[in-house]
Length: 82
Image (cartoon, rainbow, N blue to C red):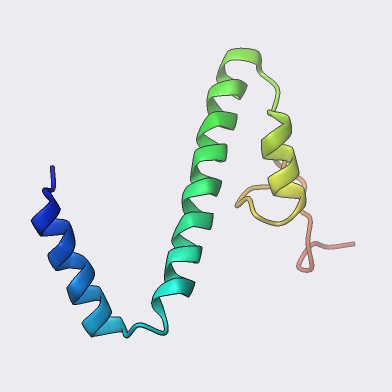
């Protein structure tokens, strides 16, 4: 895949292009995105085997981190009709 030298070059280019001040925020956002993606993938595998949503997926969706509502056909959030 990538060697150490290629990764070092990418990091140097990122620092030059983005600036050192923005990198911690970008790294934090990338970590949160990876965490959400990992939990959603785990929830999908769990749903496929058991037919029920995993508790982690329900918690993320309840916090607004998930993209889909926990029950298809129901809307929630500020744009939902009351």
